[in-house]
Amino acid sequence: MKKSKKNKSHPFKTKLILLALAVVSVIALIVAVVFYNKQASAEPYPIKGFDVSHHQGEINWKKISPQKYQFVYLKATEGGDYQDDQFQNYWLKAREQGLHVGAYHFFRLCRDGAIQAQNFIATVPNKPDALPPVMDLEYDSNCINTYTREQLIKQIQIMHDQLQSHYGKQPIFYTSKMFYNIVLSGTFKDTPIWIREYKDQPDLKDERKWTFWQHSNQGKVQGIEKSVDLNVFYGNAQTWQHFLEKSQIMQQ
Image 1 (cartoon, rainbow, N blue to C red):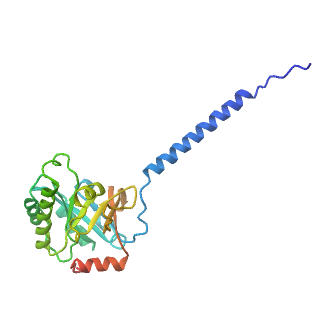
Image 2 (tube, one colour; image 1 turned 45 degrees about the vertical axis):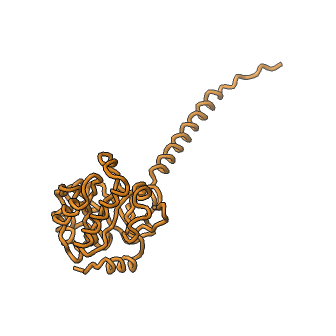
Image 3 (cartoon, rainbow, N blue to C red; image 1 turned 90 degrees about the vertical axis):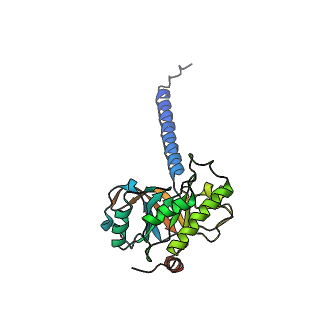
C-alpha cells in the first residue's frame, strides 16, 4: 500500500477561513452601525431650514444662502428669566442676510405660563416679517411631576394665547413624538406641530400632520463650525408661500 501524503494545506486553509470570517464580521458590523445610525431622509421636502442657539457660537451669516435655507429659528428664551446671550446678535445678522427668521422659547414644565410668555415677549421684537413664535415642549426631568397633564396643558395654553395675542400670529409647538403622544395628542388642533424625529418620518398617535420636521441634529451648514439641527417644511414652494401668507408674514 502507498503511504498517504500529509496534507500540509490544512493550516493554510484554516487561516483563510478564519480571515474570511473576520472580514465578513467586520463588514456586518459596519453595515449594522450604518443602518443603526441612518437618519430618515428629508430629501422629498424642498423647503429647508435650521435652528441655532448660543451653543453654535460664532456664525458667519454672510456665508448662509437664503436660497438654500428658507427659514431659521433662534433660541430666544427659557423659563421665566433666561435669555440666550446670542439671540439679539443672531436676530440682527440673520435678518440682514435676508433669511426668514423666527424665535423659540424652551418651555419649563414647572414654571407659570404667563411668566414665561412675558420673558419671551420682553426679548423678541414684534416684527411683521418674522416667523411665528415657537414653544419648545419637551420632558424636563426636574419638573415632570410639578403639574398633572390637565394643569400642564392649561399653562401651555396661557403662554400660547399670550404669544398669539401679542404677535398676531398662530404659535407653533416644537416637540418630541413621545411628548406629543402623551401630553399634546388631541389638543391644540389649530396649532402647527414641529416634530423632532431622527430615525423615521414622523407619525403621530392621532395621525395629525406635522408642519415642520427636525430630521437631524448633526447637520452641517456653511458658516457654522458646529453641528446644527436641520429641519424641513411639509410642502413645496407654493405651500410655503401659503403658510407665510396665512401666518400674516409681511415681506421685508
